[in-house]
Amino acid sequence: MSTTANGFVHAIRQLFTAPQNTQQVSKTASSNVLPTNSIAILSGKGGVGKTTTLLGLAGAAANRGLRVLLVDLDPQGSLTLAAFDRSITHSSLDAFYGKNLADLASPVSWKEWPGKIHIVASNRALSRVETYVEPAISTYRLAQSLGDLSSYDLVLIDAPAALSSLTFDAIGIAKQVLVVAEPSLFSLKSASEAVEFALSAPQIADSNLRSVKVLLNKVDGSAESTFRIKELRSMYPKLVVKNQMSLSDAIVESNSEGIPVQVIRGVEASLAANEFDSLLTELLGTK
Ligand SMILES: Nc1ncnc2c1ncn2[C@@H]1O[C@H](COP(=O)(O)OP(=O)(O)OP(=O)(O)O)[C@@H](O)[C@H]1O
Ligand SMILES: [Mg+2]
Image (tube, rainbow, N blue to C red; front, side):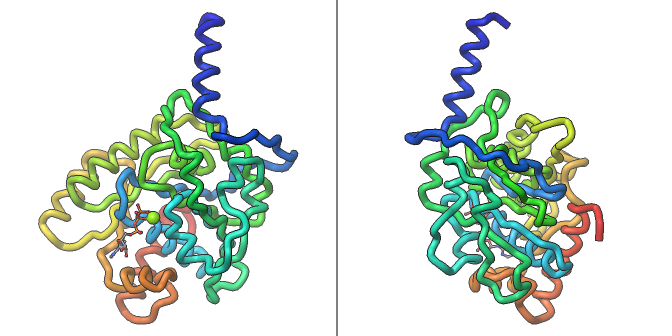
């Protein structure tokens, strides 16, 4: 490549990676190793159940005694609303301005699983660092802002619905990408865009090879649901996970209270909790 071409690529990268309207702060030397289990949850479409899936996986993991870090990268902040009821003094936005994610974590407000689940809260102003990205030529901003996450067994990252820079940054700190889809025409189209977006994102390093998977959520017994599930499974025979999440009143109830479904009593809640547990087993590859 010519020097001019190199200069152009560098300029484009700067455009996509530099934080807006601020000075980049140099990082302190600390470990920036992704935990073995870090999952970014995305969709390409709003309302399909990203945050719900994250809450369910967090509850399933905490039930096993795992230590979990939730990272809210959605400016909308639904996860933060559910999991954090104190005033927000620091947030994931700070990780774009030189702080480490590890230093931004606080215990969640749920009384269950004391000390097991922490959250890096969201901030409305995250939309300030939201820009268009071209995965093939962009670089990750948060990947150098992890800090020491070795005290966590699982990191779950909630991405915004849009396929732009915050979603890209979520991918950059994940070992697995889980694209959530509903069995409907529009959702499948968005899911395929999200899959392509994630597949075209560069690996961080060969030792951190990333996998992309697709989860079907809000599955019911309707003909439309059955047809779309078949369609998605034939489109991505290797990517769609075996486990799928049923449409569940218990999930609606737990979401309205801002708690993982594992906290809710009743038969339907137990069914949903079991589905999340099986999903976690499939994603982590262990029980
Ligand atoms: N399996 C399910 N059964 C029934 N309702 C569900 C299920 N999963 C999600 N929902 C409902 O769908 C709605 C959207 O869920 P959620 O907020 O998790 O989606 P999201 O993809 O995170 O949305 P956004 O893109 O706005 O962040 C909520 O009302 C939630 O209760
Ligand atoms: Mg959400």
